[in-house]
Image (cartoon, rainbow, N blue to C red; front, side):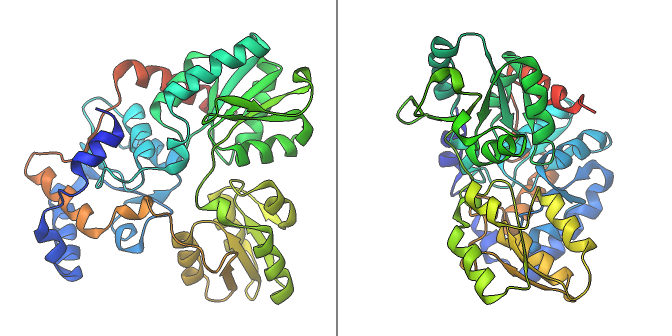
Length: 368
């Protein structure tokens, strides 16, 4: 049963009683269960989660950091991962077999990760090998499924994060003359460009049309970008940048590298979620910022830095919809099932897939 079938099966099974409980009742129950389970429970919460969920997180961070913290927490028997499906998969890959990783709502997926299906990827690799032979190495953003991480691991590649992408792309070019970058074309393009690779040396693989999009000689291609994107970050536009420049000329614009190339180029700064958080924290009181990343995080940064003027780069931006499927009722329901011995929404990555995926992760983590 794949994730889509699981999600369809479980999409509407949240018991009605949790929908009827007040916020106070839910919060009181969550605290009670946390106290009862003590060190047996660990709740990692991704930066993009709602505040109603984040308040119960034992640690906050990006997906890889939270998976690594889950791995380090050897006392925890239950890891209730407040993020999306691929993040819980990574936690399951890194943690011990005896530990159980749970996702409060199985519908919490990632549109970017879903844009690189394993069957599409294997088919694309065969066609690309016909074009380029054994001159390629695959890299995948950690925002990808365990199956894609395993594919990359089998073919000598590694995972990357938005923080270490430049280092990992440089490493990949030490192995092979060409890099296939999955699943986010924007992070791949921005990273390669920062390393001095021209846009004319980058091609795009379209998995829907099952073809390479490129005008020029194949031998000139150095980077093959998978045609995927983050549905949140792609909504920041050049028009948004121009509007901020016109209306708030004093503001610095800082964006995530999952944004389009033209948006990153027009911004003052670009970097990972942690890079953005750190930049705002280090900035002087009274400084002004327009932030191009997920809205839940932007709102949290605004609330934490009342001494600064901060807005979203796109005032009409919505939070990540799939991430927001994890809410307080689902969290409490998941916690209560632990007490009943049911372990609702267990995430288990098949052993061979986990082994190859961990190989891809380890190749990244071994880089100094």
